[in-house]
Length: 485
Image (cartoon, rainbow, N blue to C red; front, side, top):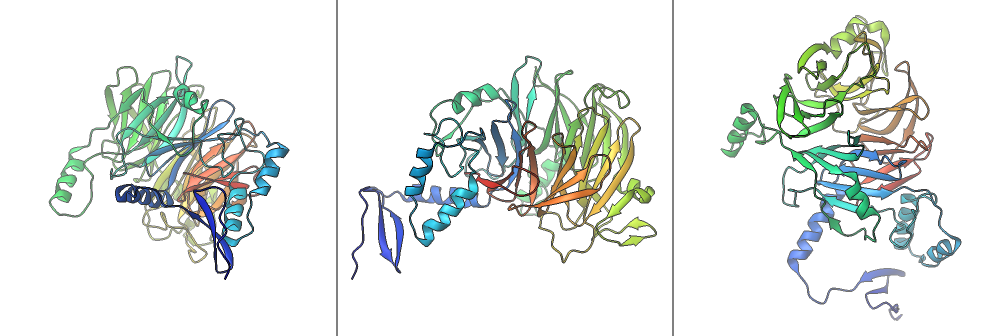
């Protein structure tokens, strides 16, 4: 019989099993069942992670930052410095010819391409794992409501960049310089750290939300959580106010950034998914305009300075009234109108405003349609939509009904297209002036929720219902995927 071959490393050895060299890890000297349970819980949580928000850092897009359903913020160094030849040769020598290591080797090469290795190669691993992991305050592995839904950078009046994160814990504001202090030091990728936020904004659950929580505590059906999550956040830097789109009947919260006091709420009739501020350069729509969208299917236009409603436009009714401007993936029509899947009600998932503040792209899907689960070829009906709006005239210019529910939209300033992702593994490209799909790219992420665009080099990153973030160096193919943890 063949003897097992041991390496010089005392902690790792290879044993002969079924004709293959299988790597093993030596057991710890002292076994802790509590530590094992904690590690196993974390592993399973990471495997079921959903990445809801991705954004590139303002310093030329060197860092990719993402937030997830496990209350964690991760950072990757996307600096395009190639490895040295010595490092490439060393990495080739470490490869073992076995089925297990071959799978690992394919995953390693697929996770990080040659152009994304970073400056400090000693602390940048070749498997593309994040170089910094930040745990949001107030969230532990035992916390039930800990999802982070949105993340973005904002440059405030003091000329400093801040990272705005929103989710079940409310809205958390960080100094980006605090992140850079950790990113510039010798950090290991396995260490979880906490960073002290500048401010935290908590919503105030409405009476209906609190009452539903009481019903649930008494054993009734779950219709409320006793708190209101913030699904999206925006800052008006001129007014120095913070907006938060909540999953509560209070609608959109408005806080004073300096005093951190609640100023007012923009009342909406249903659950809000998104909020956007319109740049003040837009003359026709008015300064300090705020756009909201949610499950009532209405695009809300608000005067943020006075906290008053300007107009609410029902997207479904507008599409029906302008059927000649609407194209669709299917040819199903009812008196010229688009036929929807299982519901006549539409919900708004995301709103994006162009740099000038004159155009808005609005996407969403049919309520009780196929949203939440990947769309397939067996789903012939229309379940989603993309509509383009002229904000000064408050009119829809074009639209398209899609088979998939669209969950995120982004203007691609790098090449003049519009990007969308939905509940199927594709990134779609649309013409800038008309909702006309001009291309698609297959993704590894089965359902996309977030799009990040590097305006410097055009790199696109997509997060969704996967513990990986897909990265596209061009619009043709998915170049590699980054593991979230």
